[in-house]
Image 1 (cartoon, helix red, strand yellow):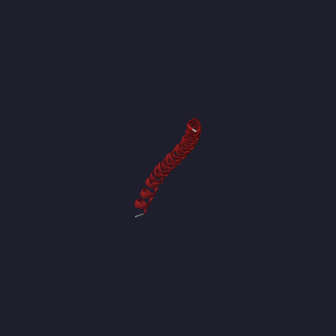
Image 2 (cartoon, helix red, strand yellow):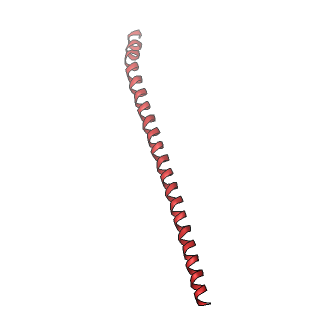
Length: 74
């Protein structure tokens, strides 16, 4: 019985080390993936802001053109 317990303990230490290493690698990969997703969301937000500003400027330009056209007809 003691031999069985000793054998199990001898083999369980490397197995636990392998599992721990695997879980650490998984955690690092998840962390990297979350950082990449965060960077992507920042870029999407920046793109949204730029497009919104561009659309606002185009709208203002059209309003100015319309007001000039209306002034010509009067």
